[in-house]
Image (cartoon, rainbow, N blue to C red; front, side, top):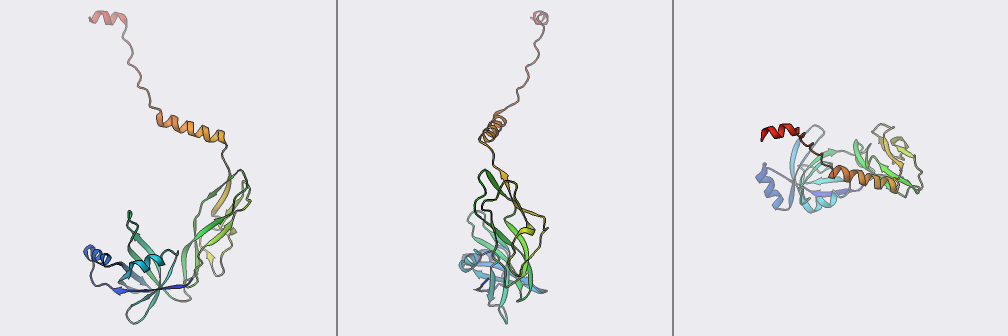
Length: 216
């Protein structure tokens, strides 16, 4: 995975007000930590960071650190829930040759056998790999897979240098029988009945005729 060079500036102001000023200046508040060193508070250029983080597990070369540059991986990214802009990022410092555990995408291609329905249980999977050689994903070809076929973690073709960090028997995907038109229609009918059904309030028992006459 290629390194993405990004220029950092040290932050000396903290708190919500300082963070807002940083973001108004087109930069993102960040923290980098790791290897027993004290956490360092940075700001990173928003546009460059946004482009870099489009790649899963992007390897960042952080320039501007005191005395040297450093390599880092994104650990946690906080985004605005409405605008989607990056509000804060936690980075973990790594070194060449160091092993790290990361989650990489499971990419599926192909079409299962006619009448089958693909059920993908895992869209990401944890592996251990060198920090500077993190694979960008694992590909699974499901072309022609028949109903009942299953792929477990142990069945995946891992990229060179990567080792599995989940239960080998963990289910990644399997092929189910697609529901028939009758089953779909029946399911729709049941859902509609549940949505519309309101329990009826039982009517009060009618008083005997003699009781009604005596009360008049």
